[in-house]
Length: 490
Image: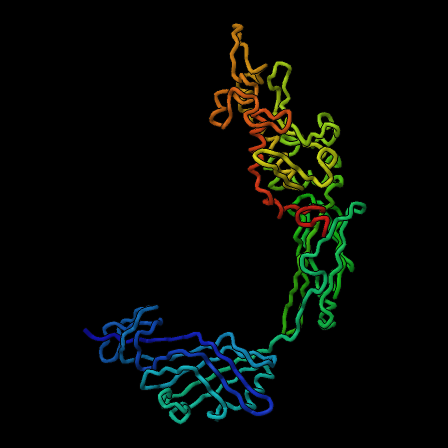
């Protein structure tokens, strides 16, 4: 069987740096350690190219493409070139980068480990300092060929004897300008004014950004449904800008994090530069909603968060304020309205009412209750627990009693024949057949010591259900002031 031979191309990523001095004409091209195989010997080198099958007389009848194959040591009979490319180079502190350095190795007889490659103009006359510096200054390519033999390398074992290297350096200048937004600071908090319904943001870039480019900087912020945005100046251009959002956003998701962007062209060297800064927009917690003045902002926006438990305002949950059932003197935070007729039967959808928590709870919205031990929550967490508590009541009534014909009177039903059917002998509003499985005593109105007069077992169960709310889980959605992300103490 005849040996195959290969047409082989090899390209290797290679980290390199160009170092030079300005007080003396000394420069050096330094590359990190890599292994390069001589052109005429290939040993276990991964590459790509074409394989010649069944060569006769040095002539190939059929070439087969291959890639990433291990190649055994074969005498090379086809044309070949090897290249090493230099990426992510660095040039001292002078504002020039070098990229695209290409080394093309000529004929060699032995495998060659170049170790750390160092080419400098002290050893290699073709590394002309003035020509390279000129290429750097003009942002041009520099090309040269180095005749590389034993005399070029002080370490004879590292030499690539009697070969040559084509070196190509492609210079481009580094941008010496920086565009930064120096005002406002990162995550600065802004509050929509309750009187004007607007928020005003002043922004500017660094003073040392060249004026010839600064005058054409363009500013932008995201649009927000329900709110309009305007800029001073109106063309949105310049070193500094005034941004005014007029009207609170319709959706809670459009409050909070808001990214200000400024960008502009900074010439052929730097190209397009961009700077961004995040600010946070908040609403006044206790003010009336712009979209439904009968609701306070906290109810309007918090119902759109996880604290609203996915319920729909106007269908599942209503804001009752200090209306019927929510009178301040009663201190009730909410109640479930199952809309029953006198006989205890439902005549419509059940829903939940939330009262004015400022008057019926306290101005700090701090909520406390006792089960196994005293517990408390505040702000959006208190709201979430109160809503979940009332939803649990609604669920119990809808699932336990409506299918049976409505709420039992004194724990019993009377069927059409006049027979008395007891379903809740202890009158704790949990069906007797469910109590044991739920952890309650079906003979007791209050299985656990009550801490309020109405602590029957069904009421205790709603507290336990609401206790499942993970306090803090909606903090990241709370854009109220005062609130979890902007306490009054800040």
